[in-house]
Length: 261
Image (cartoon, rainbow, N blue to C red; front, top):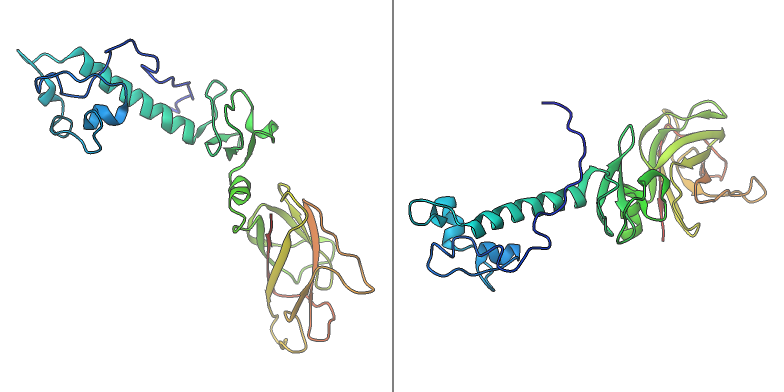
């Protein structure tokens, strides 16, 4: 199968003439019931469960010598085109400049592809990677909607060389972690976490031979009294892992996460 290009899908019958579509199979059942509502086309006027004709399929809608009814044809094509347009608009299909998106809709864009979530209604023609007022990376947008989710996190090795990127074992919205000194780590976020009124939490795994009381992993802090000032912006922060005496110490594995408004 070829790599299909993204094309705009407009809902068929979104502005139909009167009596264009009907409850599926209603003519064959004896009384045509007109409706442009997808639920009513399946369930009958005011209904909430599918009609016997809908469940039985196309043959139940034939009349006379086996001819289909034009309103049933219109119903099926309108329904299929509308549902396909819904999927392309809401559920992460590649971005289309002619599609109108609404808050929460998801589109994919770029190479390699990145998922974005619409932050505004009536969002048309705004390219996701250059329109931060209208689009946000999907994970970042989710954390904006649900503040209980972390805005960024990373698991990394903490015992590397000073001023060299640590090895990241897993992360979300973190581009790099740089070791700036013993137990001193600088975290750089891919996208801004928004407000600087966030909190940071961290935990660690000790190196072989270290004890919890006297070595790394006992205390986490953003800054040191009398030492380097805490760095805390929307895209970068620094933190320290201290031993039981308050002295910075490297850790074998470190986990850090950002939470906040």
